[in-house]
Length: 121
Image (spheres, rainbow, N blue to C red):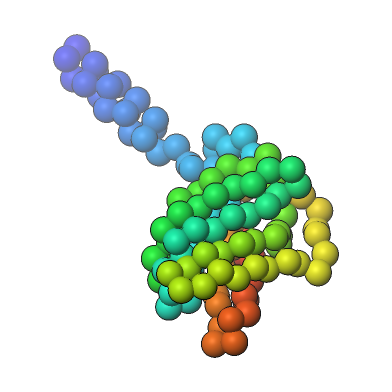
């Protein structure tokens, strides 16, 4: 009987620990990947009526995922580094993204222009 109880407890633990991250999403989740050699002290993403804020993204590093009410493949960004502030405004806005995990890959080139790449995780 003890073995049966132990087996059931272990089974419950294993199956509850195997939950996939995107099973419990209430909206699109977006993170920032800093592909530049500069520290991003502050990144503001303006999405419709909301602004989402990320802080301290190391060079070649990632932020945590943040949940959005509405997110797009490209959105307006304001990026503050240790030495400058740059802004990215997309040419057009796509349809809103469905539930899922996404990454905005951001680089600031030598001319100070923002290079923006969208990735589905």
